[in-house]
Figure 1 (cartoon, rainbow, N blue to C red):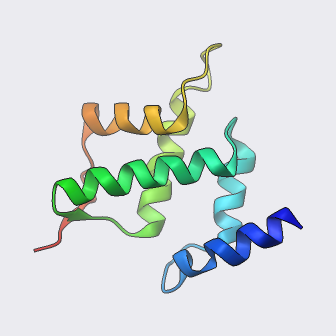
Figure 2 (cartoon, rainbow, N blue to C red):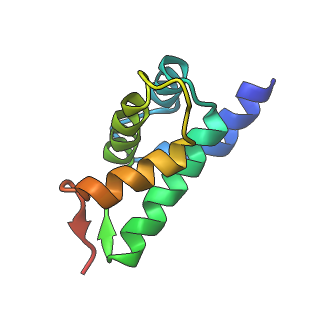
Figure 3 (cartoon, one colour):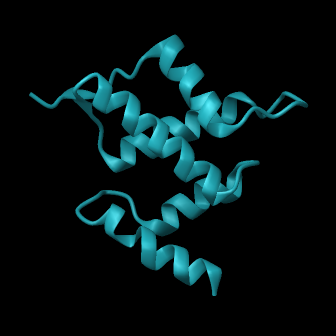
Amino acid sequence: MCEQKNEKYLKPLFKNSEMNYQDLIQFVDESAFSLSDWMNAYERLQVWLRQRSLQLSVKNSFDYIHCASKANSSQTHLQSLDDLTSEFLNTYGCERAENTQ
């Protein structure tokens, strides 16, 4: 029931995207983070992009977060996924992002 509710809520996010809801669920299942964690990290990434007048496709956004999620896999103390994403953004930037102007 909860997954159906999430899918209904998130489905518009994937409209006109190379990625779909099930792809996101696969990323979530492969990580130590919840769907809520992933959506918080997605929002953090979107804020970072907007502040810099940049944009990134949904697929590339979740690919970026997926990469950040793997960075913590060998550590015993888990950082939050949105903090990991911020750390990645501050350290590496986001080369796939494009100017919105």
